[in-house]
Image 1: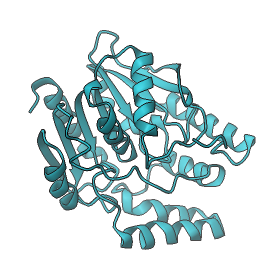
Image 2: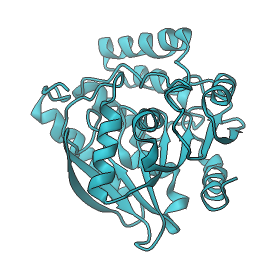
Image 3: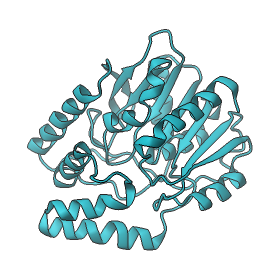
Image 4: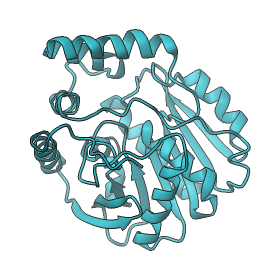
Length: 294
């Protein structure tokens, strides 16, 4: 684990935290904040939902923030107690050091997190990068996992080379040359159906690009051998127009690597960031899986 902060300057870190707090205030539902200790430093969490609700541990997307992730799962908050940790090495309030997505760091971090929360076993929910974190955990602490929900997951297939180069790296390079709003929108456009793209997303992405040393790598793809000890049922949800993790490729490989895959759903018409009009379906499908196991 590197001891170097992900933030380029202390002023940049302060700007990210300021935006984070604004995002929490804009969520529109009560949110508690707490911290726990892990071997990788302090982990900050957002906690919401009824105190007597069934617990879900929800992992954020990469190079983004927890409040933006929680928006997609807002419909679940009336029923479930959601614990959403800020991922170390990504924008947020956890210790700003990078964990490796290639080894067991994230699995060890999740183990420490569950210990600190006093959860013997837990339902784990993750989107994009957060799904890859869950898969790293499933490889080393499968006995701690009760159920798994993966949404547009990393860690199953790699981003296509053409998408990485033409849709992500070139627009990102052009943004760094110009720091223009138009360049930023070109970078985000493939991942959103909404037009215009939500302003808080643009605002946070710009702050991340300007002030954070961005994590370039996704959690490495899991193998069937690594998941041999996983007994928890798994639900995978993909998006039909996801250019990062194409639905057909994810569906095909999910059926190969998960020994206890309950279902794979594809959200029609949605890109990587689930469209607002699809979020009700997303949460209803997750709720059915949690409650009924189907």
